[in-house]
Length: 287
Length: 104
Image (cartoon, rainbow over all chains, first blue to last red; front, side, top):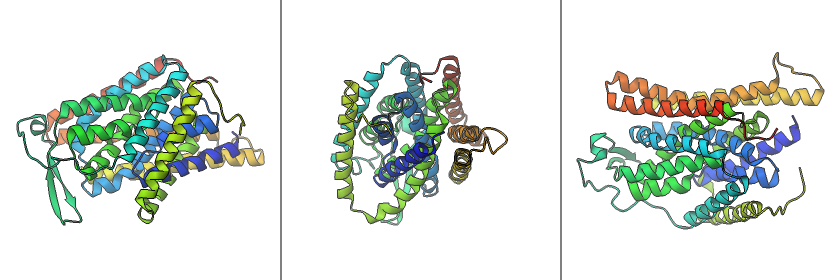
């Protein structure tokens, strides 16, 4: 094993994860483009390494949300049926999708994520409205409450439009398996537009879910031999350390500056991936 | 249930990360000083073990949720948790039966 390359993998994953953690984003979306474009790693190997780092970040970061009663575990397990099913289909498809298409799909997801990052996110309208009591959420007892520190009281919320949320989550699982990312780009509309969860509950629950979603595809990729330990090991370790650091720095940096920086990075990586899809390699130098 | 899951995920992440770190350090020592497999088995397989632990951690979390739901006699959610485990298991079976996409 080339220890210089391992160190580089560790360092870039740490950086990507620290950056991602500062805006509550999974690092996976940066890892695959960095590994393929700059590290000249095969895209399937990069996806395998990235999916392990997604699990590591989810598991490593779940505890504070769970202890703070922000995670809706009942809702999570229901939605996980859809995300793991999506991941399963993604694993089946992964072998048949030509590599240039994967790059193209990745570029598309990067551009969509950049656009999503530009739009400000707040609590969705009607987040706390109690409307239909006899629906899915009522029958499965998914409605819950979370403690709001600023107000010093528990806030009750209702989960809405479960079927639409499940469909979007299926798509999120599929994209997650195909590209080795957390697919926040599909989960955010699922959580905000369909389920209409308060933003804190939504972040905590999606972080909790992504570990299981990623495990569904990572398990299959591991059995298939797509996870290369020499690459995935340093990436996973770097991501965990980065996530811990990112959470600490979070408080000290202006959110607006970060957001702009993120959009620029996402667009730049998107252009790179798009060029790779067309077979144009701007960066020839090998590490 | 929340505090149980929080503890398992937190300590599990520590164990898996430490295993990967140990494997990578041993592999680094091997390459730096020309020793071959300082550990009894190849250092890289310790890294693989750490990765496997990370993949198993969320699965363990679903198993625990299943156990809690069954103990609370919440059979509807027990079935949902079992369904998630089945899908993950099927994925692994499919993965084991198909060939690697990585060019070696």
